Image (cartoon, rainbow, N blue to C red):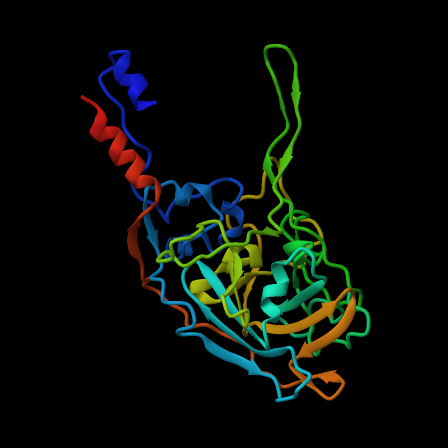
Length: 344
């Protein structure tokens, strides 16, 4: 486009925008950044307005495998597939690392394999959410889960939410339940429009935010993918996951606030207004992991005998009032630099 501008004799052009801006918002994300006055303290990786820059402004990234906190470790057993779960957090993402025995992790993205891994995530209120997962033979969870992460070679990876705790409904109740119902998150991103010229109707567009992308999210890696959510290391023993805070209905990670509103219907006209949804402080997240092969339950952790282990301390990341960040030139910078440099 810049070359065309110069060819046509215009005065010039500019790039929008130079750097990412955490203070920006769009109508599809603004209602869920609560309290809104604190949204500048964290980076909403799911807000396009915050990520337009060719200079990334992002939380400092530490090498994978470092600075993770041990959430729980499985009791040693020769039959175990799941060894341990670790977590860490920054101003943009929640990170999980699941350790697996042998090279089981490599089977999670092999399409010819039927190995599948599920992670139930309890984000608040131990009695809220469902204590049942859609896995045959799995005992009840010690607490209720709001989200279910599913990974398999044949189906890819998806993060599902309880029907009453889903931004696409929208509901933020997470009532206690014993049913294994978790559904996709598909929020409206483009409203229905009617052309003023010929009356053509352009239907609504919904985004599939449940779908998670495979790829390396280490910026120092040669195969870095900025859109990625999960990958398995070369050993096949470590599964790495990163989840944007908004995907987990976290309104403000810096002060541990999650969306929570007992109203069955959130009042709205064209959209939900700023600071309209209720919230509460989470006491931390709990994680339960299960592995199946062709639908057969192979392992689940943390466990004590035939049941899940109780009394596990929830993972609560350190809060902050001053966010840490770094800058990094994105991959597109070099293309922009070469284009501008070639203009005479």
